[in-house]
Length: 115
Length: 109
Image 1 (cartoon, helix red, strand yellow):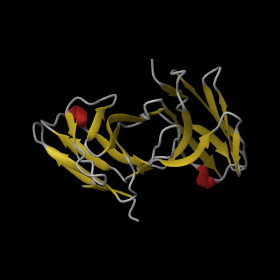
Image 2 (cartoon, rainbow over the protein chains, first blue to last red; image 1 turned 90 degrees about the horizontal axis):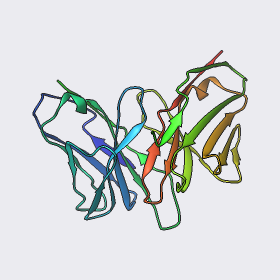
Image 3 (cartoon, rainbow over the protein chains, first blue to last red; image 1 turned 45 degrees about the vertical axis):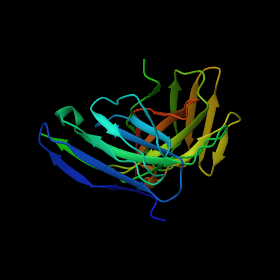
Image 4 (cartoon, rainbow over the protein chains, first blue to last red; image 1 turned 180 degrees about the vertical axis):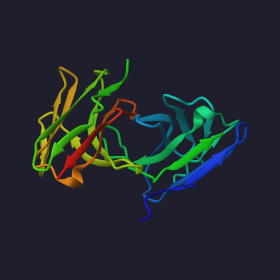
C-alpha cells in the first residue's frame, strides 16, 4: 500500500494563478480531508468528504474547491491564488464508521508559495 | 475562542526526564481524542488515542478529563528521538478533527 500520496511536493504560484493539488489513497477509506498548516500553527480543516460524491466545508474553505468522484481521489482546487494561501497543505484519510473513530493517515504534504 | 488550546512551549528537557503536556478543548460534545506527533517539515502521525479511563503505551500515558475538557500526555524517561511537536486533536460528532497548535519538545543530551 502506498497510503496517501500527494502531488506536487512543492509549487510556486503567481498571484491570480490557479492550480489543483492532487491527493490519492489506496486504503479504501471513506473519509478524506484537506488541511492547511501555517508556520507555527496547527492544522486547519479546509474541506472534507464522507464518501464519493459528498463534500462539505471545514473551518477555512474560502478560496478553495474540492470534488470527490471516486473513493480514491480528493483533489483540492485553488482559484485566483493569493499570498494568504501560502502554506503547507496536507491531505488525510480515515476509515470512519458510525459510533467509532480511527486515526487519520496523512500524505507528505504540498508546500505552496504564492508570490 | 479556539477549539483546542495547547501551550506552544518549547519544553527543553534533559534525556531521562519526565515531561507533561496539557490541552483544553471547547466543545463539550467532542467524541474522540488523540495525540499526534509531528516531526519538522513532516506530516503528523498518530501517537496514541486518549480514552476516558486513561491509557498507557510504553513510556507514554494519556489522560482525559471530560468534566474539565482537559487532555494530558505524560512522557517518561525522555529520549532524544522524542524531540518533536505534539499535537492535541479532538474529533467532534460530525467526524471533523480539530488540531491544537502543538507543543514543541526538545530533549537534550
